[in-house]
Length: 200
Image 1 (cartoon, rainbow, N blue to C red):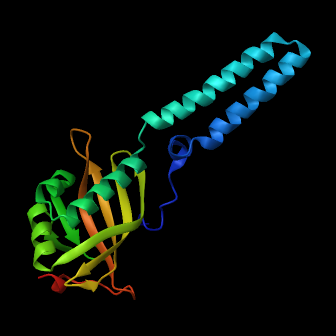
Image 2 (image 1 turned 30 degrees about the horizontal axis):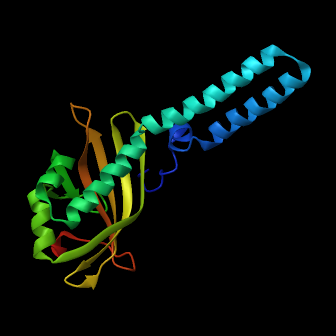
Image 3 (image 1 turned 45 degrees about the horizontal axis):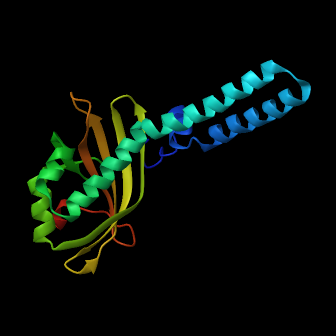
């Protein structure tokens, strides 16, 4: 299974920290009900529990604001990668790439070593402009490894050229996410199969 078909598998961390609002609203709602009930019945314990529920809701919101999940980190890294590609920014690209990073075809066949200068040269040589990505998503099913997917829109020598990509990521020794593989999935409006002959 590739990340393309497993994108929804974000687990409990995604549920709690990427979209905390259901949990926050539930805690605030419980707090309000307990507070009203406690005041009507004169039950001090309910009032105390209502404060605990409110604090739990606020804590969940604060945690969501402070904690970046692996999925969020991968999406942010993918966005930075797209910006760096569009700007042919070799140093910024190298900062995101593992030293062993590879460009591979749709089936995983190795095509080339992937480096910042390699990407910057290809962007310049083929007059790639207006690079943008949409439908960016990511998944991390085991610690230290993940994948992101995206639909890319750009112009190649002035011609609109859509494509889809999967980036595979791994954490380095410093704990930073690095791209270890860029898999070129499709090319063109009809979703054609790319080949290394397109850039060599």
